[in-house]
Image 1 (spheres, chains in turn cyan, blue):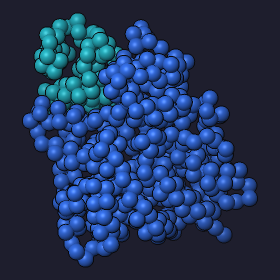
Image 2 (cartoon, chains in turn purple, blue; image 1 turned 30 degrees about the vertical axis):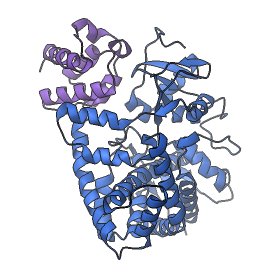
Image 3 (cartoon, chains in turn cyan, blue; image 1 turned 120 degrees about the horizontal axis):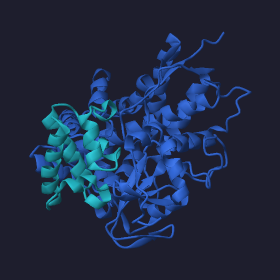
Image 4 (cartoon, chains in turn cyan, brown; image 1 turned 180 degrees about the horizontal axis):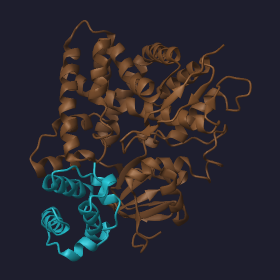
Length: 83
Length: 403
């Protein structure tokens, strides 16, 4: 799955979790500005895991400032954040 | 520091366990309390602010049950075993449920304390003897990780052959207490279901021991229902809570003592420069601070360390940072006597009821280590994959034979 697909997945899922439209710009916001909580991040990690077919740790979202940066790391196979 | 600070501080939980001081110490320059942009919450770094938080009636514990229920609903999966465990963990609750659970744990620990310590002493001797005979061993996997389950098994009438399975099924690396992958939670549920089933069998058996009667009495006297199901769920929490924290204090504490003594420790020898056993136990607990953090949320507006905390805000205590606060603990990495009380066991209404028992078990271990003569650190240490309790999964040591 490419980073573009991951971004689409994140936009779709976050819109459901946050109950509002989510745009690509939102993925560049700090988490406190985005309004997502830890359950949203665990959920998103699970969705990505399902889509990619490999484990993705929710901690990945704590290691980057924005969802976009975290998704880029996942897409590039950043080893120590997957697992 | 303001909530709207342009500074984007993040709490990388993995780094917090692996290299806590590298992550947390630089944050101190921004105050006792800093705003984290990720995750969205206040982080408490000083001992004084931690004590304020622990005593503030307007700050309630974070209810993980809600988070697990949301995940369960979102993905239509069964996480009921995790929910059952959470229902019996005192620090996951506030109000009447918390009071009842805390009372039940305190009553049980009070009534089984002597037997627990006796079994601990025996188990500790046996496990260390094995290591001494072979001249080396893994102090984490071969000793610290096994103690609580072995002692529990002894008390509850679990045959020795079954205790390893109990240990494996309850070694969940913090999956119940903190955010984890959904897959890990599903796996944990399967393991917990098997433990609950076995605990229910033990609860039903009339011939087990006085232990089950003591469990029943603790539940009834605390206003909780006493059934085979409630006993098994209560004991599940007892198993989950005791093991990892004890292992954390023992392994991280011993590793620190070894490292600060050049890799060789000779407890009780004339040239040993360490404080007396009483202080050493406290210092092992402070330096290890097994439970890394504790989360709260504000039920009303409040003020901590001069900082306004708005209703609904989340506040995360770094117990590790508070116990290494240089203003409270001079030269915080040094093992010293005369320290103020640390916050490793929490405080206020959520002070861990097992604290006196844990202190006594650590004293027993130190006495037993003293009889070994010297202990040497060996390479091969690894931290556990646990983001809630900091402990070593492997801590190889050598026990040179005494001539």
